[in-house]
Image (cartoon, rainbow, N blue to C red):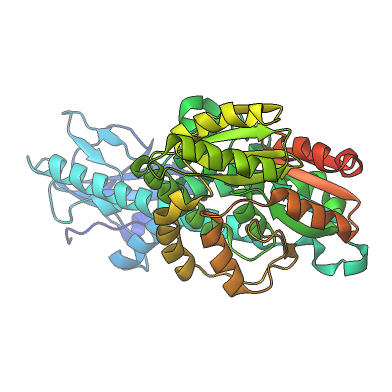
Length: 470
């Protein structure tokens, strides 16, 4: 009888099998039973998620020979890989020789008592299950990618007439991150898929970072931007379940700084994956630029833009050396943040209060964002933007640079690059947005940053603003 190994799967007729294999002793036993002496047929009970029955394991001399009627060895190998789930375990015979239960790991024509048999079977077993694990990992990644793409691509407002849409979605920027965010959205499978894909793209455990922090890590540009982006998109995905009617009425979107990317993904201009890759590139570029050219930020409130600019110019002149600072964010009336040289900003905080401002203080930010200090970051981001697949959004999205909706794909690429070196005109954009006839304003994601700003821009709109926890 040839020394090959293959399988026969039941149920089958024992009498027929006896006729097929003559002069052999039969003994019924469960898997994991001790091996029997040579010239024994084992009828092994087999149960797993796909199959329940018996298979035959036949020993001839020192060699194991399993019968599978009507199948070649390669067919059986395929059957094992495609149809049955096997776990690694070793059967122990009376002399303590382990044998691994799987056709794929056996050595055709080799004796289980060969001194090299155990090591070789173990090597094959490890290789087989590593390949199986790697294949499943790739399949899971592909499934997560498809699920995330489907989630971000589905637009509930597509069938709603324009005249019936009256909801504006406003996405937050950096600064709203906190340990424990995302706990609610992760109850949804589609959101879980987003986080799985995001973790693979970013190269770190995003769920763990959101849940456990530490806060110091979350607060860095490198981690806060991707985190807030994913959490905000996930909050709108969660809204498909909790607020479907609201989503059907979406008319336009806007986002503060980082939030502009989230708005573009939400509106369909970018896929979730493409948007996250851009946010990752943006965060890395801004982090590198901030470390290379030390800058700072300060907040100023209670004075006009004319007075503020005069104070900036005076502070720069007093410090000297060609050092500069700029208005970086127009948040709400008489509420601004400035970016630039740390010494100029420290001087500004002294000067502007003397000129009539109510408050001025330095912020715990280590970069001069939205100013020419970010020129290197803009160049690096520009390369990523040139390669990104960008479409016109399905609803209007406001630009931070102009305070108006985008008009073309080329404008999206150009203005996203300029956004790093020019001020965020949030107040101007929201003021224009308020003329569009919206009856509800939605802020998804962590915190209530934009709702607080809305209160200072327009009391009526603030009363119509809701937040969706991320």
